[in-house]
Amino acid sequence: MSVITVSREFGASGTYIALKAAAALGYTCYDQQILNSIAEKMGKDTEQIEPFDQSTYNRISVFFHEALESISKGGMVFHPFGIGPLDWDSGELFAANSGNNKDKDYIEVLTHTIKELAEKSNAVIMGRGGSQILKNNPQTLHVRFIANMEDRIRRIMEEQKIDEEKAKMLIDSWEKTSTNFLYDFFDADIHSPHNYHLVLNTSLLTPDTCVDILVNAVKSLK
Image (tube, rainbow, N blue to C red):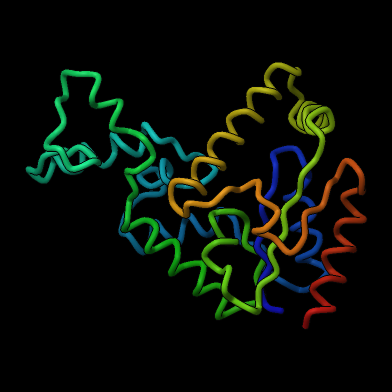
């Protein structure tokens, strides 16, 4: 087993578990490095591709990014359903942003980057559609970490020293971005257990117990 892909609910301690498991296995954990690699390969600053990244993905931002890039090249912005150019002065502009606007270049480079990591190293890949990109890779273990809402809110409040309202806002934002990202780019439901070998609930199991389970699962599959 050479690769672990990690999907997690915000506040479910997924990052902690991934880092601990990677250290125990001698693996490298990849998160922000993936975004940096994509930016380098595309010849862009990380700020330019952040709207497409899972942790900061925003359908409206992506749409405007693509639209403005098309205009800067002298092109037109066409309706995603093939019925002609968009009317920038009407509500049609916003109606067109239905999740069908995908940046093919970004996804192609993302796919290449993650497959490259899977081929070259013992890696723990955080989010970014790893479970879908490597779903047919027999050397990959896919895991998702979840937790009860009450526990997630409490953990975020404690870790970030914020109030309950702010914690709920962060959770809601994360849920929207991660859910939309996987659906828009991979036509997959991030919440479906069928995408993963393991779904571990950190409200029922301690994070350290989850580390042990993950490490043992990887060792048993080698």
